[in-house]
Length: 126
Image (cartoon, rainbow, N blue to C red; front, top):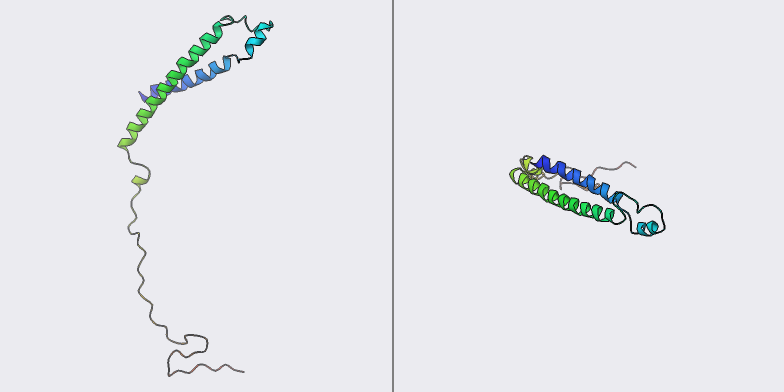
């Protein structure tokens, strides 16, 4: 059923494009008044405007209805399925790994300062 509506939707869109391209602009009536030959068409001078505008309006209504039908099918299909992110497995642990506190450093704590009271700072040669 969804495929049938989709095919009808595409055909209605193509037909609307064709009908809009076939219609005359508002300035075409002035050209027909001076004998350009546009009034001698298959539908007559006023008949083409009525037929093409009615056909365009009908196809626009069909396009609107098929759009609503495709929206309905799309909404009913997504209720049964999960999204892309829902199918991904959850990570095992999101908390950072706990590191034990560092032991106090032995040896020189700074530039030339003794780390403990019994040690002396190394002598710098001159």
